[in-house]
Image (cartoon, rainbow, N blue to C red):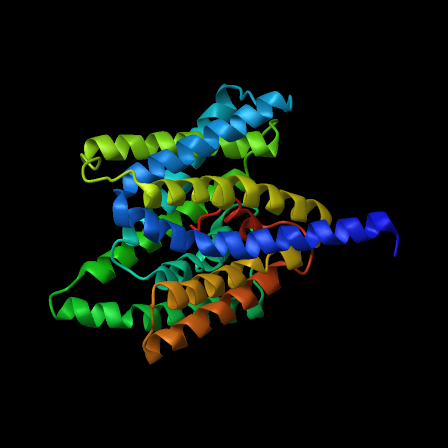
Length: 318
């Protein structure tokens, strides 16, 4: 095997390791973060830092990074919906629900994307395999949320409210992903991500001020470690690895992150946080992973990027 071919294969393997492990681990990092910081404070710090660093790198590398007025409006909309609402909803919800459950709720993004694309002008149709996946996926959501519904009936509605917030945030993320895919940018992709993170971070600042959610934070080792991990590994490094994979590997292979990340999150939650599901939740987990496999598989036959490939490009972990 030629040396350059072997080197490229190693880079591809390392990129997959980043996308699988780091994106899957961001749910755990967010949990550690919200234990010592209010969620809007953590969101503000994470995305403002990541956005500034990515835009700074774009400037140093002389990438095209300055948007025109129309692009700026689009970047604000996408940043607020995708980062400010989508990712922040997970941060807020992880105060009340396990990391594994949060990751599985976020894994429903391809199901939302498939349904939304169907009703849009020039949208993509859904094959029978995809329809089966959508039905299995939403049935899985019912199984996942069933314990929370039962607790809600007995007076403790925190888990079901947090799950509902996560699903609403996931819908915002998916809508922004579709809008992003249908928007033309003349900027470098790394700079686009930087602007979106910056505007998402500013929206977190707005939420923090409006809700007075800046009280009670403790900027100790745990807070800094969580924030810097999310900035470095959850956003910058893994996003770069994701872009590299899209340029060098078949889209259908890259899309496997959509059902690997939740598995990583569930395993880490079980090992480190001692999180455990009841039987009905395991059924729901299996159903959602199967559904994501069916939906992404039905959308990848033509090997071109779809919204399912775009929706997690910034590491929603989370």
